[in-house]
Length: 436
Image (cartoon, rainbow, N blue to C red; front, side):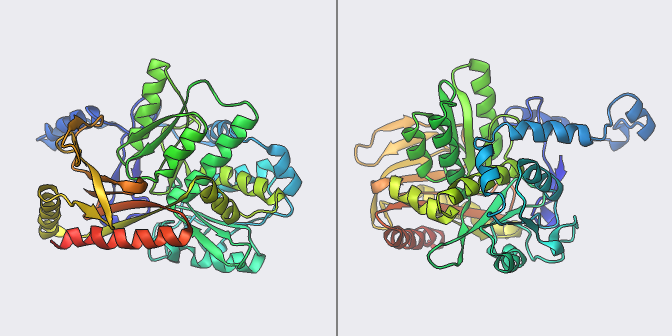
């Protein structure tokens, strides 16, 4: 699949999927690169004409029939269709595809389910690879919501949604019923709100499969583990990258040991069900709108419900801080930072004692109190992870696709203010590591 997604053109590339519908993982990735590198004379690359490709079935246009199969599949995830119909005229939804591919499938599925008040940002409705109305067409960037929030205030929207240009990730704003202001959700928050809704309703309706599984990543919120425990689910953490979540689904199906129900990563991507093996922004929109209808009937906004989740499990708050270092000098600097942190592991961060150091490059987990070492269960990768007291954690790794080093961190507070205070201290100490 050739895509730049939300990235600037210099990061353009392609994604390769295997026959299970998931992106390739080791060893297929290395094997494909070896084949590419073996091509030394480009004149030997085989070519066929457009007509021959069509006649031999190697070139196919995916049309409405496939769209229908996809939409039929995702609508099977809906849990409360009758509630959607009850509140359909009272729920106002603003949506923007950010000039990307999400517009038609989002409008189609929401219309099919009965949502009547769906307002698409007109300036961003049509596809345009130049993204003329946004500096950075990424739902992680609050500035990408400027036009959507303007429309939201005009129509008094309950929820404001944006999918990135290839429509696999979802950004969310929801109204705070106390202030009337729109509040931004992180990728962790929106995914875990969907998870709590889906899992609670499946449990209530006795629709949870046998041996259900919840898959997250090591840099996503620890709230995921708390929710999985609440619903008696097998919980798995992978490296960041949805290909690793897809790999888990394949493993579950091969062994028959667990049944995948939900998976997500902090970078605004989640997957409900197994109709796909990658993050799916269309399904995320659908489930979030259903959740909005469900909580609307109870007199709650999605932000009200997010606060209820925090009250139930604890105030988990997270932040990701990327530092961009371009060019050859940048690559050297990123390497130096990783080596410096690796050779001088911190004893405390954010005022909390480091209890465990996980170095995924060496594959070793070290207990800082006892000195005992054990093996990680994940493949080797240039990632450092620190687990601390009170469910506090942080992680640092170079980006695999951009000239960045990324710092991830999370805390658990007694109140929102307490959590934000902890997070600020942790962020200060984490970023100081990059300056040493």
